[in-house]
Amino acid sequence: MSNTFGKLFTITCFGESHGPCVGVIVDGCPAGLPLAVADIQQEVDLRRAGFGPASTTRHEKDKVEVLSGVFNGCATGAPICLLIKNEDINDADYEKIKDLLRPGHADFTACVKYGGFNDARGGGMFSGRITAGYVMAGAVAKRILSTIGVETLAHTVEIGGIAAKPVSYEQVKQLALNDPLHCADAAASKEMQDAINSIKKFSDSLGGIIEGVAFNVPAGLGEPLFDTLDGDLAKALLAIPAVKGVEFGAGFDAARKRGSENNDPFILKGGKIVTSTNNAGGILGGISTGMPLVVRVVIKPTSSIALEQQTVDVQKMKPATLKITGRHDACIVPRAVPVVSAMMAVVLCDFAMQAGLIPGVIK
Image 1 (spheres, rainbow, N blue to C red):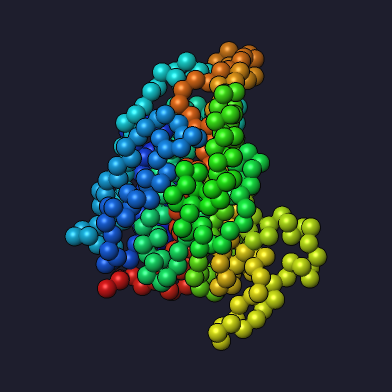
Image 2: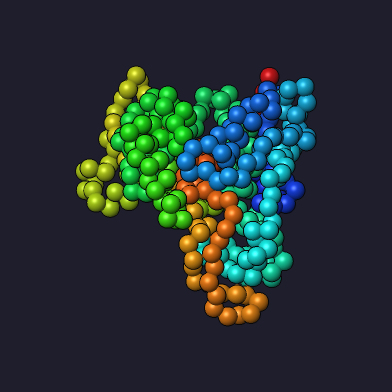
């Protein structure tokens, strides 16, 4: 079992969907870093439920509590423990189906792995609820990265087969955060919202694609051969529930290009070596090039749907049918957007520390 990620900047997540709380312990934060609860809360609020057509009706306050590691508005250098209490819990929906394996969920694999002792309510530790801890850790990482000018963001580029048109990253910064689906293309966002509202009427769900971008990443981050920057980013992003694919730069489109089309020519710009294109997504040989880091993740459709599905009753060991009730997102893509940005920040912060770019004390 491994609930800890990172080498110098580490995060350890804890809690379950219907337990008392979810949280994260962040270790390796430089002493002296100015850090306010508001810095963390504003990031957490971006993934809260209750906003937009896709959202669940489970309304948690998601109030961030800092239990250790911060004193007089600054990080102390000790582990930072961040916690959010679970308050809007309804176990009754899960008691009725506790013996029925939910298709698309980790019920079966978790039961096998932990001998049936796992907390299966709402998915337990495999629930998207655990990503609140990811976002809190990402908020700390973003504050650290800001001291060296690195910035991460993410936005929705596709839902239900409806793709947003390409826009500049400046437009993404200006438009995505204010959109209910975190999409920078207003027309596509409206189509996506209509598609979500339509699928809800059929008790079904939709998936999509999120693009994450990091700016001002120094060249040279990455520890080949096995601790590569893209390798650790993929590992962190695949730890987000519902992520089923990761690609960098041109990604799978590179398979349909010629080498002359896919290669990024090197040029000089202001006395600095850059590339004229960025099909590599800012990473070559597992090491950052200094170009914007571009990654996209595939989010599967929400597994909890009200349509009747075939399954197995694990107590009776007989075929059964399942109809899930309760409160679930028709599309979890919008709420996963800040999680993608957070996990990118966590990875980049760890690699920046390994490269010696971030001191142990910030004055």
